[in-house]
Length: 188
Image (cartoon, rainbow, N blue to C red; front, side, top):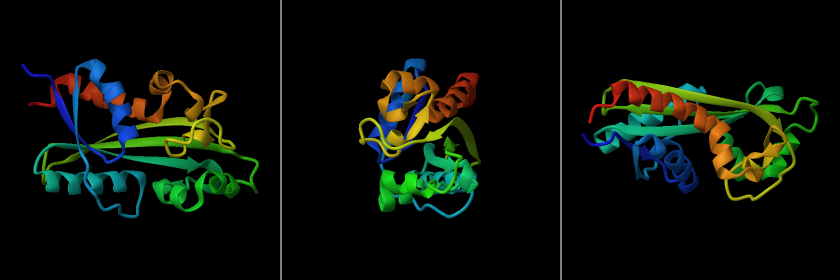
């Protein structure tokens, strides 16, 4: 029997590396296809469901998509699913400035993976959350907002990648996906 294979739809090389590092040791093969997918406005879950439906229709088969959010507690969850656009517009300093008027610097990193067996099929969601704080940037600036999200005294950017992959929001969501696959739910 061949190992389970997931077609991860992303153009983000860093996300692909993390997903492979987390799933492949469990014997799950991760292939990749980069597609431009529409991102609707809505809840964390709505955005992921719609991306997954669109990807399944374009690919004509099973797909895995992810939407990552950074939710500031003082701002009732914003920027949330719009973090990519906030990062592109205002960067690390601007994200810190959003919280300048607040004592509460707590935040949640949220990864929501959507899996569909193909066009018209149900979208299953697997979500992971890590609680931390927003801090001035520390560490390499090569992966999104990692330099400003601090967990247990270190920013994601300062952490060894292997250590980050044991505690991150992405890891927690992928652990749920892995358990689902190991339950025999992904038939090849």
